[in-house]
Image 1 (cartoon, rainbow, N blue to C red):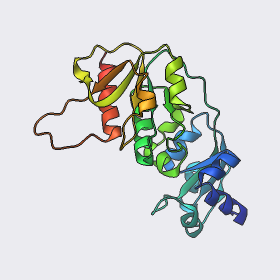
Image 2 (cartoon, rainbow, N blue to C red):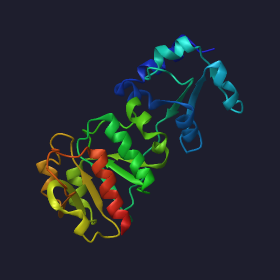
Image 3 (cartoon, one colour):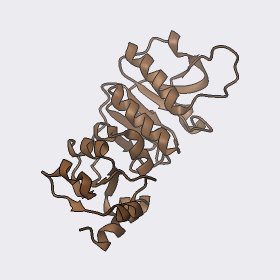
Length: 240
């Protein structure tokens, strides 16, 4: 059965400082846990309510009551399975394909969805500014639906990155050139900005090309959600 120390550890992992201290994070749900178990992520502990134990019979698990799981879960309705995993070391970013970069994206749901989009569109590397929300935030992980297992996420200073890269950098702007009319290269960096303020001036000054998504009909919407905009732009990129 689960111990008090184990419960305390998982409760602490809700906070970024403890995730960084222990180099651990947790995910919930059978699908997401299974996705990470099939990946290169190293499992630290698997906590299972009795009814779900049979699905993980080949692994070492710790039985947890529904009451205890609810105390440590990030979900309103815990799914019966919680896995604690070790943070992987980021891989070297290879400039051979398109890369997505995020400038100060703060909403966990947005980051999680962008990670899932990178997985869908075959984007191996996602570079985040240091002010972007932590990718191991429980809400981010829930939104990725396991895609975090297949996307290499690196936190770097974007200004330094853009100054040093040989790849063309395309920034998403409301007044950018119509992406549907652009001839996009086989490799580049797609830079997406903060939900409220867009791409910061310090980063924007080194962007080679500003692109945007045209609006049709009565211009009533102020802007697109960052995840929605990323999906449209990645679709254009992959159309070749």
